[in-house]
Length: 640
Image (cartoon, rainbow, N blue to C red; front, side, top):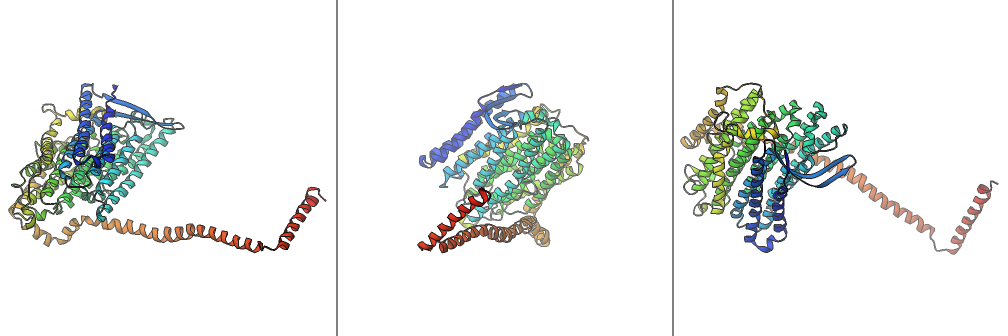
């Protein structure tokens, strides 16, 4: 059942108005007006999104709200229109983006209170929200790609927001380039679908028509397209091997980390795979690849996070790890489970980043946890809300992460990926360890804060504290929408998404033992963190000294950036300098330009010798020309 719903356009209109106002009028109208307009347009979009979502809930299962806009591309037989569409899947994502996004915009009012470029900041934030909503609401793959590119651009603009710092500007460029590599794969995937379906006379990228004609793709084309699209997902959602941009993105303002690099943009790849689940179901080998990359990335990033001293870097690698869980879920064929973790992760990871920002705000920008400690009494709201978020990401009941993470691990086991399930269980233990390490190093023990900052420690203002409290509530109860099957409204969230993403069919039945092991691993991780950072705080230093080689390996992130620099960056620079610059640019391009100039110069010299200014020479040349014309007519034209 599809119903036309014109109000969908308002969800895009409000952030678009915010962009225009802040871009052209914000600096002139002043901070007070911008602080109202920037978050205000997001709360307005959230209000319309809530109305839309409630309307969707009142419809029969599988209901769709649509809003055709206008024709877009007509190229021969190929045609694509612009249109908006909300079903169960996009409805959940719109609520996340507008709801969590509005809270983060509100938090930004306090966090950016002393920044002179406040209007530019909210311009970029509103533009990001607009781009993300285009990606979600698009009713076709090409329009989704427009939003996909838009969030990539905004990520670059916001990471490099303080562009006067050369390192920050470099990190922004790094994110932009790495995402472009992934986006090339995304484009090739689109081209593969168009070419294959076009051969059968289907010239569209509309999601409904793609689903209806998916059988025409065949296994080979579906596998190729799915693989290429997944390359795009690894870039946007920071999975191996294209994850390297996300840790460096932490140089941007903390609200940016919360909005883009925790709650919304980085989940775009998961959303794309769930949206095209009918395609990936036809390509089981590609689906297995998605699950494998997700599980390996989750474990890989978690091992790095256990030794990082920077509070935002810990959360950055935690984000990469949690995204790995999401890909493990959708790669196991449980698309609803992956999206469920997208939602709960938006609550607790967005909250974790905002709490980290609150700590930094109190400590004058300090990010090194070795220079923190004993803050729980001085920052009570920040401590308790961050503690709740930590319980959620550690997957302890009844907090939200317990329900979504367990559902993913259950799906991984039930789908026959037992070794990926083992990696997921180990990662669960590591997650609890590094997150409680963060809590203990930041809020417990003796204060290690620099003496010049102690007197300035203070709790965040209400405009920052209120979003923390709201997200803490969501991080607590957000997972209750999908209680275990048989308990109250059990599995309600999965049933709600089923018409949009399909149902998961288990191949193996999980036992009570396998179901409980992730929780046991989480508890062991918490206990180990307590022993090492509360009970025996000297042990970590001893272990770092005794196990210096593996410790340095993790601290330096497996030297992946150095490896990229050695095998990719330096060879490309060498080729650029020696092949393109010297050979092509120097010989071919410069040679062609210099050759053209030399030809003109030489011809000019020849002409100068002929143009002597002597009348007798000119008369002689004229006579030769006349004789030549006469000879032409006499011997060639008349044939004599």
